[in-house]
Length: 188
Image (tube, rainbow, N blue to C red; front, side):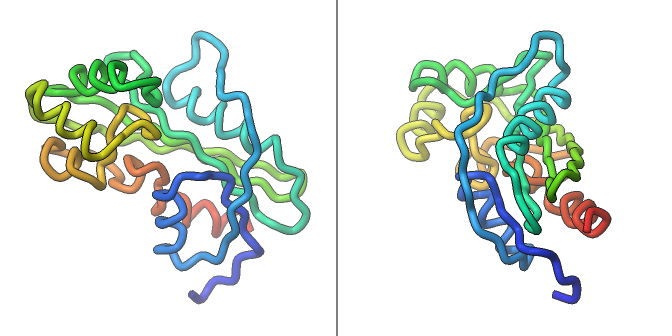
């Protein structure tokens, strides 16, 4: 890579975010901190994603490293679909997404010392209608309990159910890499 970035800390346990940073050619280490992911009432989906990302970033006091935090929100007609709490919740969310168009927002925060910068990306995702049997198959085989909206665009749901994506594919995975790379260049 022609650009030399300072050391990077990815504050995420998401294997997808880790894979995306690796594919970007970035050297990074993962550090995790427990953060309250609740948010004030009345925020838009984009504001929620940025707010939670900033809360995660505030947990870090880095020296020379750049800390990257992110939060992904799935929104369907104004309703926020977070990570499912159990199987029934995943079934409910996937049933709502079946045959509909929803939005995925990822808020990203970059921190280095006392400098903090946040941005977000938005992607529209259209899903074909699926049966309850197909939803059960998906939950049983892909266990989407750690994913906003109860699905991963990089697995069966994305390959079979997602009909159209308007915007960044990697944003739906949890990190808008195209935008992140450009923002990193400006941030350093």
